[in-house]
Image (cartoon, rainbow, N blue to C red; front, side):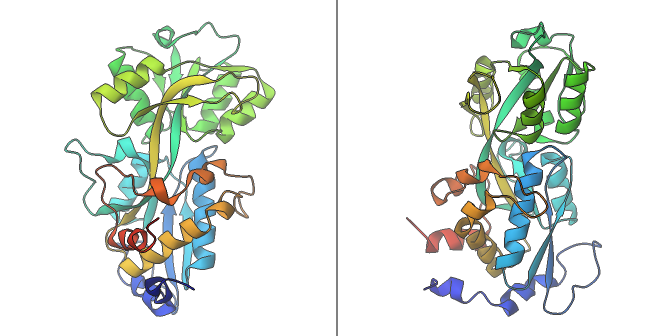
Length: 319
């Protein structure tokens, strides 16, 4: 039997979200429907796959709701679109989200923590780059402009301190440029394994450069969103386990979404996390990062408050 509050989630309650949620984004919703937009990420990124799976399951299981994914440059771009009222939901890494005073950007809150991304520093196996300091003066992709990868990799270089010839490329373009020799290394803050790096490693020998010292520097300089981590040996073909830094990813929501709607979305995510890991119709490949979605860690969003609808769902489902 459904909990009492969840049982009250009806088509009418969901439809309360239909009026005035976006500023100049779309015409009035059709009767009996609420149309939501979820900002994801670029080609070759886990955000694109997990965002598609989330959108599909919310559309299937929240009465009257339809979710459309919006490709983006990732974290910073998603926050911009949320604040501008161009989307209702968006994925972001936690370090990008936390402002200098520790608060969330105005008008936004969290539905939940989803999974952790790991910072990859990838080179071709034949590269002369063996450690972080060898990046000095090299052509390095810092990730797409306005992405979480760019945000974190720039922090790492600043803490180095180290100057590289930075390039702004998304994950798919970074992997292709690394393969073709037009860059020397690429940063990628993403789930493990990530599609673009997996495909590269399947056809060309690669290496991951350890970032354990950089993880310690980040944890000291910016307490809260960072933790030392390991990319396992099982992640990529013929690549040994590599020490790095992990950053949680959060599903953000505009504060003006009704609590009952967000309650229903939250319940869908945690009721169907296993099937979310299977991917979506448009992105049928598995999304193993979704196996990290669980109630115990979901509320660990640091200084970012939960939306009242999400907080209510977690209170009703204490374990």
